[in-house]
Image 1 (spheres, each protein chain N blue to C red):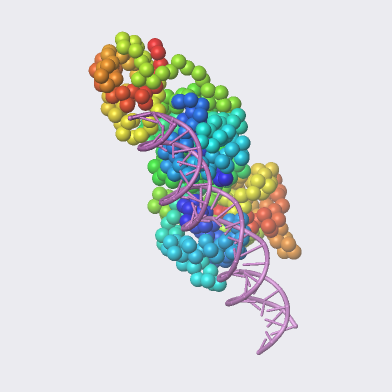
Image 2 (cartoon, rainbow over the protein chains, first blue to last red; image 1 turned 45 degrees about the horizontal axis):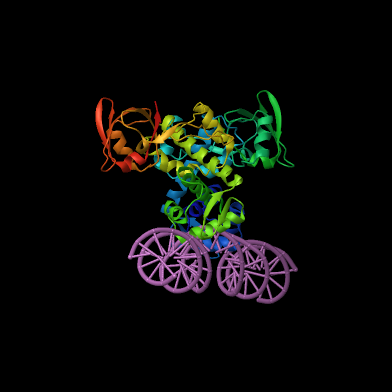
Length: 218
Length: 218
DNA sequence: ATTATCTTTTAGGTATACCAAAATTAATAA
DNA sequence: TTATTAATTTTGGTATACCTAAAAGATAAT
């Protein structure tokens, strides 16, 4: 199996299993990887042979220790590059993901660690996602989705889980940048729309958008 | 044909045809690409179909305008990355080539132009090879191989055509760094060994090594 | 000009990473 | 529990990028 293929599978499995439960469903994987479910079945069998995942047919998939280690290192590369592109090379928040998708496959630890050092070994990328350290350790935090926030509480925007250009532009428009302070003014019971105050301005957030916003309790 | 495969073929054809004549021999290509001559034949047929080369069987291969354009852009990416790795990220002269081999395939003009700007749009990479500008133009120069140098003349070391670690270490040992002033003291008729003076020290260079050293007439 | 040598091409074959369609298995609803 | 629906896997097949070994073509040497 090509190294890049392995990496894309493991990274995607990692991303899917960190959000939801620890077991990944084939169809989601097929979706994220933009390949057919049939191909996913085939790929998972190979990854199982390579001992990167435990794959039980018609049940689900889970990363092994080795698989998680590799996945974490890809995630690290991706997020370090995103941060470097944004902070050092002046790329926009909405541009870095796409380029990092390619850069993440360059395998040279010295390079990544160099970039990390230059950046001051950051623990979060420009999207607010945590960056694993060289050993694969991730800074734990009390982050929640904005959709889980409580009325009349204060939060700080720390990241997003949707990296689409449309969504990032929406955030930008309302000055919802990483680190922005947010006060939840009210939650509409009917459709879970959230009204919040950011920079003294009122912004209405759909439940769909709130699902994608990671905030920290202040 | 995969984009990376196309790029590796074109880059290699470019490198081979700039040194010698404009027509490339299959076996050399096979060698540089580390694949069999049979595979080269196959690859060239595809590149011909794609209109990147003119390939006439049992005769040779030459880049088309489109092929040369693509080749130049890969060469640019490669050399910009090498320069960036060396100058901005502190990598050694002997380390950058290998990493750039991977980085050169990341296709994002904005990224390369950004790096180029940061570097001050250099016209030569850390090996002394010319860097094509964004339009593919290469700075012409009166560079020659050291093996073509004349006795009692003065030169400046501008680059190398062999990027092996062994060779680069050899150069380093004798302080033969890019920009070093060289005086050719004598050329041994018997085996074309060159004796030169660099930093007031005498260094003997084999004809093989001299073949790989690019110097500028001073 | 003919042989010997070296290069290139053809022929036939492998492994990878995909696919669509059919068959199976699991989940859900009646 | 059985039928319906949905997810997964199997089957059979494609294209790419390689390979080795044999055949054909070009080059050089006698």
